[in-house]
Length: 101
Image 1 (cartoon, rainbow, N blue to C red):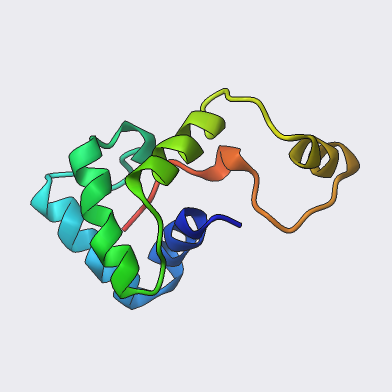
Image 2: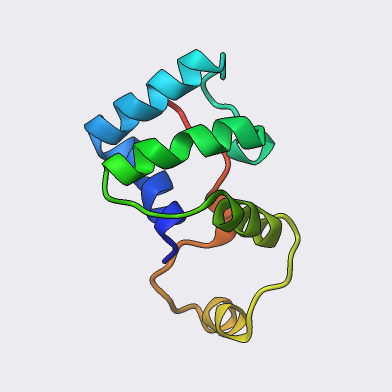
């Protein structure tokens, strides 16, 4: 699982991470339920220090690549096999995008 996805998942499961995300959302006037894929580079870059504070390290480029792959990009052979076989522990890419904080 990517560090960005781990951070994303922790926004709703870790109160401290959720509070940091909420501060950023308020600073940039992001409404609840907004799609992360539509965030500007400036907002995504603001998430990085909050993520690092919580122990998640990733770059803006890694976030962009994640969204590129989750927005119609091709899946790897392993990802296709996991989906086709109904196995795997990593959440599918289609579940990212909307947060309710």
